[in-house]
Amino acid sequence: MLVLSLRYKTNDHFWFTFFHEAAHILKHGKKLLAIEGVEGMDAKLEGEADRFARDVLIPRREAQELYDMSNFRFCSKKMVSEFAEKIGVAPGIVVGRMQNEGWLPWSHMNALKVKYEWIE
Image (cartoon, rainbow, N blue to C red):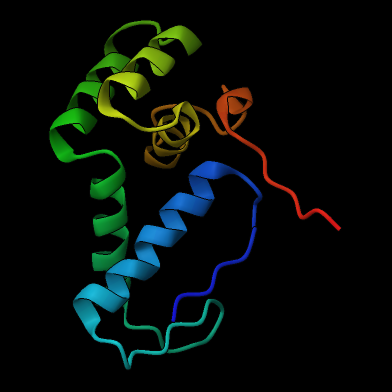
């Protein structure tokens, strides 16, 4: 069973977390109990799950192109949106990856992320 919350309430966090947790099921077995905030999580397994999620959302070859785009010329919202469309993901996922890698400040382009909220 895979259970997610709306922690951070944006599409980049949601989908990264989904694929991270799916990696635990696919790669580490169905009996692994992974609960955020619980001490003792294996750093190797966590790193493997992080890499799986990262590479499923934006494969390595495309990530290299994104790195080049973000580090060697001005990167605009339009460029991020076009890149996202080209690889078939939401622009917010691209922004989240760039922020996480340190290629874009955390305060930049957050308007491209989809915000989620619980409806009562």
